[in-house]
Image (cartoon, one colour):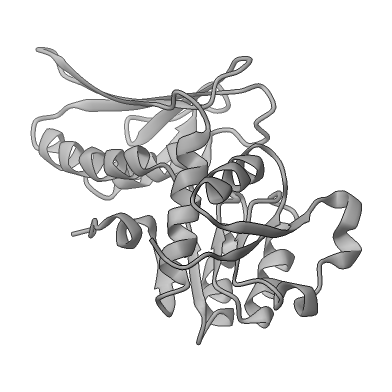
Length: 243
């Protein structure tokens, strides 16, 4: 394990609290936490007092927060979804420092992303039809989840589908991958990809038992970033490489 780190957490919701718990278990210190109540304290100068930053706020604030993180020069990981239209600009801002974005920090989910690509490529050769269902807690703001979108993009890159569509929101054709988003109380996150043919069905499911896996993955990402300069993904952190 890397040295003990002083960590700043921007956004102290479900992910932020899980990061704090796992970081302390791994011998790190939560030096700063930022919520809507103390945003005046979120400055470049204060961020520079930390070794690294986890940004897990909201889609409407993430971009500005990440620009501050980049200006501070501190290694930063972000788990906020809904801002990726600015991804290239943020990566450029982190030139000379370290940055990692993950739609999901769970080790198991990132392994699932890779397995999903492999199955998608193989089943596309045999006319399998694919759909995705994701289930989350009722407080989750975005639908579909960023994780479901990552799964969908992995399928689209390996198959006949040209886009994804949220089921029930608009008409789609056979080239649109259907994603169903379900909200239930107290569900940490379940994602299922079904590959259907006339003869059989393959189902790939990742089910989070609790939120500790998200926090642990984020802390592992921070430990990786403080020892490496550049733009990374969770594949780098856990030893996977996209082909």
